[in-house]
Structures are given as structure tokens and as C-alpha cells.
Length: 332
Ligand code: PBG
Image (cartoon, rainbow, N blue to C red; front, side, top):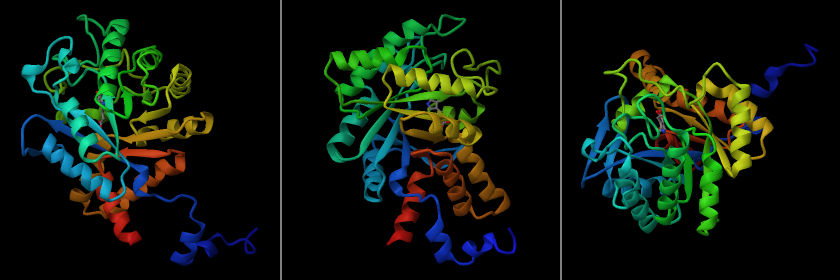
């Protein structure tokens, strides 16, 4: 009891605070998402995501090289698909010449040691912007799985290391795992979006990949397949199902609105948990900088440490490059 116990003793100077810190952030904790588009020499800033760009494959490779050089171990790729290549079934997702296949192949050639993760879902490829086969009323679970399996195999064939099914169809992890095994892709990792909520925090991302229907259609949402944000126990159930079906890691998304879920799942499952600090979280943190002139570096670090404290093994964040650079400088 006070005054014998004085908590402030262990906070009195940086050396002792560093010594007793429970968590440490390293560049290898961070996963950098990139948006890849057709063309050459393209680097186009996304309006709602400051300092994040749509990159053509050549530019992407340069950025991935830089990421590797500053200690980032994995990147997550998302395609920007031109409207002319979109249709109702997302058939461009299965085109071996699509921009994502080119990007994976090129990165594996030019930066062979970095891990490459791709999203398995159809939304960047469909005109209706849903993550699967849409029959006018709802997304058909089992028809969608068939396409996701094909998409997964194609990505594995192109050298993708980690498949990240982000669609939330029931049973897709088991189907993808079985198909991978049948074709001897036994080293392909599945990082399932075990708990992904139907969230408004994805809006800038949908701008980035040009699949945002919110402006024209206020009723558009993904609530029949992505989770209801009123639920937490259900997230644990979803994660358990994905792990039983063969997921190696699980992703929780969005991030900061779901810190309770990150903690709950990290405590209860034996698999590594990744938290995804999504696009609107990134935008909010950036807006603090512009509007309040707050110390952005510190705000970002504090947000990333909240994931570590909650038990996340890795963090997918648009600030990864920025933060890893700073950590390198601080560490050198
Ligand atoms: C696609 C996908 C989305 C995000 C990642 N993969 C959008 C969505 O589900 O509508 C959002 C990521 C972000 O906001 O940064 N299935």
C-alpha cells in the first residue's frame, strides 16, 4: 500500500520505462497494404487516404523493395480493377493476366524473401461491389465458394505465400484448404478474416479500389455476410470454425473498434492473431494531425501498441512504411 508502493518509481525516467515495458514494436510486426493498378509509372494518391497511392506494378515493386529494406516482412496486395474489367460474377478475378497475378509474380521475382498476402474476395471485380456471386437479393454462399477456391488456387500458382479470404462466406476455409492440399500446395498459408465486421470504417478502402457504392446507394451494405458489430461471442465462434477448417492465422477487422475481439481471440485461440487497422482508422488518425496539429507520430504509435497490448502478433496498417522507417532510425 501507499506510501510503500509508489507506482511512479518505475516511470521516473526513460531508461526504467524502457526496461519494464511489456510490449515492443518492431518493423516485422507490421504488414503494409498496397493498392496495385494497371499501367506503367503510375503513382496516384488516394484522396481519402493521405500518402497512400494506387501503384502500377513497376512502382509497386520499388515500394516493396523499400519495405523489405526497412524490416517489413509481409505486404498485403489489393487490386484496383478498371470498370471495363468488372462484371456481375467477378470473372476478372480468375483471369491469369489480371493485375494481381502480375504483381505477385513480379514481387516474388524481384523481392523474393518478402511474404506476399492477397485478399481472396470478389468485391474489386464485381460491378455490384459485393464480395461474391449476387443474385439480386443476396450473395450466394456456395456458388461464391466455388469461385474463391479457383481464385485461391490461381494465386497459389502465381507464388502467393498467404491467402486471406476476406469474404466471410461459411465453409470457404475448408474448401480452400482441401483444394490446396489436392494440388500439393501444402505450404500455402491461410490467414482468414476470422472475424470481419460489416463496418463503415472500410469506406476509404472502397474509394481506393473503386468499389464504393455508398454515394449512389445508401442502402448498400454487406450485413448478410460480414458480422454484426453488436456481437463479440460470435467472433470467437467464427474464428474457431475457421481454425477447425484449416486457417493458420486469423485476422480481426476493423482494428481499434474491435480491440475487445482482438483480446478475446488472442486469449482463447492457439493461432497467431493479426489485427487490421483499416482505412478509416488511418484517415481518422491523419485528420487529427491536420485538424488539431497533434503529434501524429505519437498518436500512430499509441494506436499500434494498443493492438500489441491486446495480443495481436502482427498489425496490418497503412502506416507500416512510415512507422517502420522511424523505428529503423530510432534503432540505429
Ligand atoms: C474486401 C476488403 C475490404 C477491406 C479489405 N478487404 C472492404 C470490404 O470488405 O468492403 C477493407 C480494408 C480497409 O478498410 O482498409 N473484401
